[in-house]
Image (tube, rainbow, N blue to C red; front, side, top):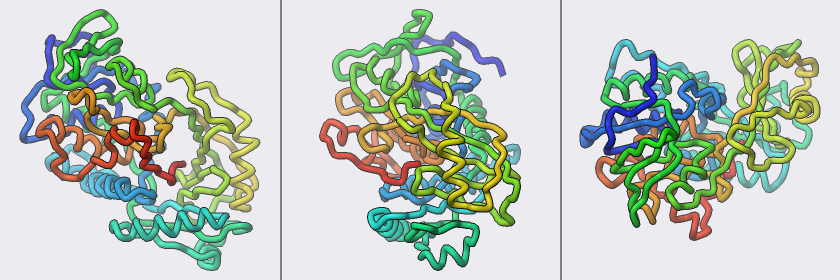
Length: 401
C-alpha cells in the first residue's frame, strides 16, 4: 500500500508521532473507541519500519515482572493476543495469533537474586499469574539439560509466556486503523508548536505546519528527542541489544524455555533453531541510527554462557544476528505513559526498555481512553505517570533482559 507524504488536512484532533507498534496501537484504539469521533494523523519517518524497535523485536510475552502494574498490563496483553480476532470485532479475515507458550525461566545464582525471584513470584501469583518457584532439585528433575552449578532456584511460568506473532498484530492494527479513518503519512516531525501549557501542532520536515488538539509521543528510541521539541525532558535513550539465531549440533528433544541466565544472556527455542540475546559489554546511549554490531559478543559472551548452562550446546552454528534498540528509561527501566503534567495535551507512551511489544495492547488502549475521556477507563495506568521522574521516585522494574 502506497503511503502519502503530505497530510490531507491542516488540522487534526490527534497527531501521533511514530507509527510503529505503540503508535499503531493508539491509532487503532482511538479509531475503535465509541466516545471518540475525531481526526487522527500518524506521522512515521520510516514507513518500511526497517530501523524501528518493532522490526527488531523478538516478539516475546511474559508475566514475570517485579512490578504489579507490569503484570496487570501484560496479563491483558496475553488475553488480547489469545483473543485477537474477537478484540478486532470478530472479522473472519483477521487471523488468530498463536502463542508459543513454553515459558520464561529466570535462574538465580545469589541470595539476592533468589530473594528477588521469590518476592516477585508471590506478587505475580496474587495478580493471577501461574509462576512457580523451582528448587535446584526440581530444576534438575524437570529440566535435566541445565547445568546447575551455582544455581539456587528458578522461576518458571509456562502459561502465557513465550513468543507470539507480533508482526501480525502490528499489521492488522494499521489496517483496521486506516479502515476506521486514521491517516498515515510518510514524513518526519521536526518541531512541535507550543503555547504555554499546551502544544498546538507539529512542523514537518518540508516545513508544513499541522494543527493538533493532542500530540502523542510514540517515537520509540527517539522519544527523548521528540520530548525536547515540546520543551520538556524525558529520560529515554536508544541502547543497543543483540539477537543471535543459531543451530545446535545436538538439539534438545523438548522446547527450551526462554532462559534468563545470571550472566545476562537469555536463550530460547525458535522453531528448529534457537535464539539468544544480550546487552553489550558496555551499555551507553547510542545514536538512533547506530546499528553497528560488536561481533565479539557472540564468541566472548553469548556462546560461552550458553554452553556453560546447557552443556549439550557445546557445538553451535551461528545462522543470523542483528542489532536493535531498546527505548531505555534510565530512571527505572519502565514505561512513561499519559499526559505530561506541564503540557496536558502532550501524551507520552515511551520508555518500555525492551518489554513494549507485549504491553502495546494495554498501553495503546489507555492512551486512547485518556484522549477520548480524560481518564483511564479500564486498567489504571497511573503508576506509569511522568510525575515520578521529577520527584525522583522510580518504579523500578528489575526483570529487564
